[in-house]
Length: 292
Image (cartoon, rainbow, N blue to C red; front, side, top):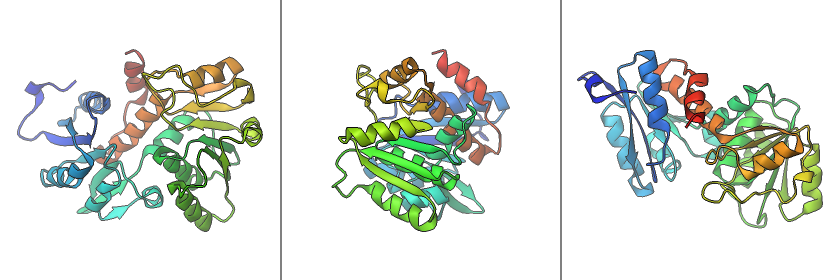
């Protein structure tokens, strides 16, 4: 871990902004990696409200920050501070990573890439797989967009309130226009028969909501674990607790499971490579986080 005596006049800065930020594991992850790679860099966290996002980013840009991570609630506001976007960020209109490229500030959304990177690290592939996502929020949107960009052909989204003007509907429309062969279904969570059929046919099931997150570990988005196919690969983006009730249900059913800590680390690894050019020691970071 970087200590104060390691910091000099040439130490470079990287940062994460958001609110709340005290719980963030990013400083521990990145500072460990800087130390591991012998990089003269330090990573700090700055409490930043949505209304403060643009000013804070511009301050960090003026200071010459190598990389700026943006977490909630400022991922949309941050768009004002970049000149170009990666393809997935264009679809979801939100960014979580800002780096300088060829004298321009570029915005990336690596959440989906991090998630699917963690899934592929377990030997799973997206091509020709049937994917089911629980939820329609910002995380579901970026996981959906990344899946389509990486070659997925069929995704089913299970959500509530489909009569509302959900933002995910706009993302679906753009993806269907750019990828005419993609099949994206929206299912009402209250329609249990369709829900059971979609889950039974799924190769990969992803829980993208906050249901089951501490301190509500006794909650699960899944009403009945028997609805899961034992051959499905089941994931939860929640990383506190390490194993949610949803994952416990899936494991009891016989499914292979993956917790949200893996998405966190793989997303960080893509960010780390963007602003340092180095590869993150993913296995080491996972081992450290899982031991805590």
